[in-house]
Amino acid sequence: MKTSGFILLIDSYLVRKGMIALLNRIQGARVLKEFGAGEPFLAYMESHPVDYIIIGQSEFKRQGDLFISKPKLLDKTILLEGPHKEGIIESAALHEVPASIHLMEDKETIIGKIRNLLDRDNKDPERSSMELSPRETTIVRLVSMGLTNRLIAEKLFLSAHTVMTHRKNINSKLGIKSVSGLIIYAIVNNIITIEEVSSPPSK
Image 1 (cartoon, rainbow, N blue to C red):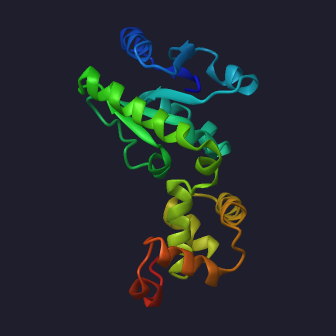
Image 2: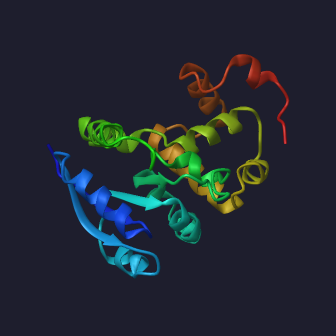
């Protein structure tokens, strides 16, 4: 099994050490670096490759600009939720986070979630890289409903440039260049129904 490197960004020292202890029990998981609040996480990320980031919800909120500028990092992010949502659960970015862990979950549940994520990504790395992310799937659905890039940006609280970048990535992954082709793909893959395609776009 391939070894996957984890970086932890969690403000609580005790929670951070607890997560490290759990990761050390998982075959194929290795902790590369740990950071608390205010430590040089961004500088480290600029020069080091990473397989997964486990990030506390308060730090996820503080690092919003990082995930906006590098949306692909969201595919590698596991959100560690505390007892309070701190107002971030409504963030559109959360829909792209592949997994979340809650502090109130027992250790076997947490270990199981991380193992499932590793198993999923290790089955076929090439295929995994070609699969649409949750955000890309949402954009395919909205394009199929007739929304323009501007309307999609408004609906998902993104910039039009970010939507265009997502659409380029979608075209590259699927090899589909036309809207009609995306609609057929969306219907075949149960992303949207024929009735929804015929319905007028909602703002």
